[in-house]
Image 1 (tube, rainbow, N blue to C red):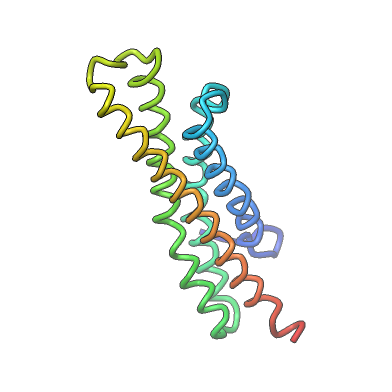
Image 2: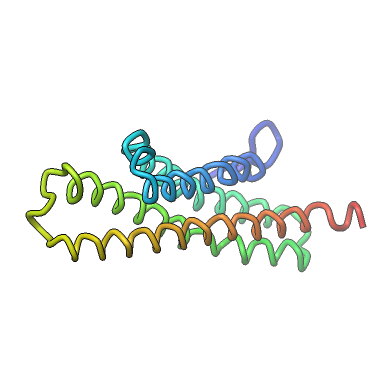
Length: 163
């Protein structure tokens, strides 16, 4: 596939989308798991935003690998490529947890279709707490990973030009 648009590499454009959608998905997931009013307002939007992030991450990585083949390799660009590959597991976990928490709170708690039929109140509470901890941890981890990748990419592009 050609990763060039109008003579320019598409990777920087895709990066800007990922830099917005991954933290947005993390924010939506954390708000949804911690704040019932946000959960009801966001609804299915949270897992859909996380799905957009999951789809965008490998496409952006592929475009980055294509760009890497076109530029002179440096230790900084190699470091950026390596750390960039670490985002996909975070995106997978973010989507899985966003979908899981949406389904859990929609169907198994409160007024959900199967609330109280499948699990006891204690088990339901434990599952909710585990989801809260997991979503918050993955939300924070995915945003930290975005910052680390972005910082390494900025260094790869600008270090030799400014230094």
